Image (cartoon, rainbow, N blue to C red):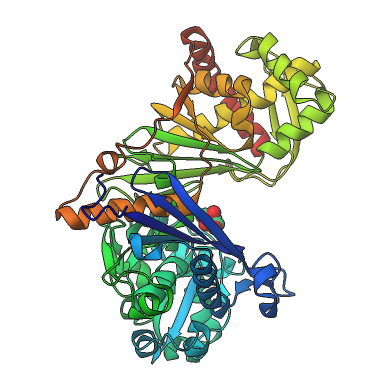
Length: 535
Ligand code: XUL
């Protein structure tokens, strides 16, 4: 990408409306982060009385956030970055991210209110009356079991729902949330003109009109036909009447959905005609932020829980686990995602129990023990697991003959844990079509070379690292650049081409052929043992 003729650098702004706050990341045309700032909902907007950005009802299941708080956060962030001297007039395009699955319910009249935003007043003042539901259900909400059961029964079971929408019916997925609101409060549903996702709502604020949902975030609703990338009539039918009109159109993630409303130009000094690229969910934006750009590119984020997601051409939807989303940067590809609950917390527990609380000792044990652990294995469900789904908890050890044993020597226990985590990810990943040819490791534990070695050998793929974390706001900034290029060139620019000037990731570990073979031989046995423990 070139600097423009006037000598002014093109900047790209990514926003991330997450559960806990609103973050902005500004990058330059050379992919450098020029500035970052954030607003915290609890700390900066205490009048909304959220904890961690949400309200929890006493039923223990319902979790919501006030959308008016998100509105107030946008003015607050822009006021802050303007007074911090951000060169907003040089922003060439804006894109953004939202926590996935949450819905924003806009009532009749909201569209007009958005269109006539007046810079002399705050967004909050002008949009106070825009909502038909004052408390938006968010992704942590778990009050929709009935609706999920009904959806799966109506559409032919969990596998059929996954085949159609990319995931079986999940409590947090928006379609099930919509069905519940329709059942509990049909009058509120009736008053509603548009149901937005958090992402498309944030884009709507910026363009001063209803912004379409993008296909990638739209995949987290149990409402979209993930292969056709359009609403599924059958899925809508079992949700609520007249829903298609309330959801509006759906567009690929690289499309421009409008230009910044004059409100932002006059109030904060953005340039007129600044395009807004379709906002998407935080996980899809993280895929862009890690610059996964061809089939087989996979990221493994080693956090509290371990998440694996990748760029896939031929996904295999599962009625048991995992998610297939439309890919946010490639309208012909998919994003496949799996989450394992027992990630870093499990590593810390075994570090404390077997390695005297020392990462050095933990790494030394990995270094000094052979790939395959001499046939010994462990299954570690400290917490109920998501992949594979099970409520059974506990730790089980097996000897080389598959017999249960009570303990393993400390060094073998450490190896058994790390091997089990990644053999399990490989196994379940393959089940839904995630087969990495290159892995980007991120998150805290990606600094540990011995863990990276196990990952590389288990998958038989090189592991790359970078300073980059799975940052949704950075991904949104990259997507702003990508969408802007697509618009400027009047064609779909492959994401790899748009990202070609970015600094490469470091190739940290190469797979060892013999170790990979050893893991290949373990897969079948591991699958059986894991199944026997998970039930
Ligand atoms: C993904 C999910 C969470 C939210 C968090 O399916 O529910 O990761 O997107 O913001």
